[in-house]
Image (cartoon, rainbow, N blue to C red; front, side, top):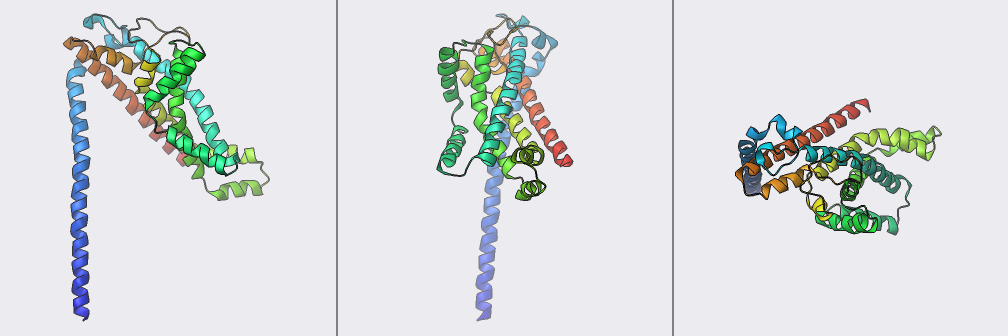
Length: 292
């Protein structure tokens, strides 16, 4: 009788191992398809764009002639937009996360707010462009300015930053808070000197990754009317502007092959910026984790 049970058990184990092997192969194939497609796209972009990665690309303004065309205004416009977005997004996003996790009473209203924030994190970016057009461009009469674009992109990344900051704050052990209160610290002292230093690596990672998403978005800025051809640098936050994705879109819309090569070089620059931001997020996270 025991032999029958042992044989049945061995057959079940063998069947589970075969299923595990089949699923493992399926997962490897699925991952390989995405990796191969990504590598093919990157190789195609590098072949088309590397020859155009010259100093003139960064020092020249856009032109109707491909030979003298560059992306100076788009690169500077992207940097300006990030400089405006970063502090606004950090203050409002992290502030909302601290309030929801540390101060707000857990109830139906808080759960409703949390559900809306989580839902907004998955809303298509074009919806934020429509909201920015109605709120900043028309209602506040900011027109197609740099500040209108930065505020629109801030709306886009705020839910992402709030969710990431909440997860980082939630991951701090309750014992840290209890120890701080036991030493006589106030609520704000506990949050600012005990909770936030521990949550800072996760918060910074979320903020930088949200900024990385923002610089690659085109639809919201197209909706608010960001210009595709800007041959000057914005002198203030109320001036017109353009960014790298819109400049790439402008080059791709032209029929000449030279502009396609310029667009590929612009994509390479954008990819490098994204990789640098992601790498800086990793460095900051590792640095602050060592100091905790």
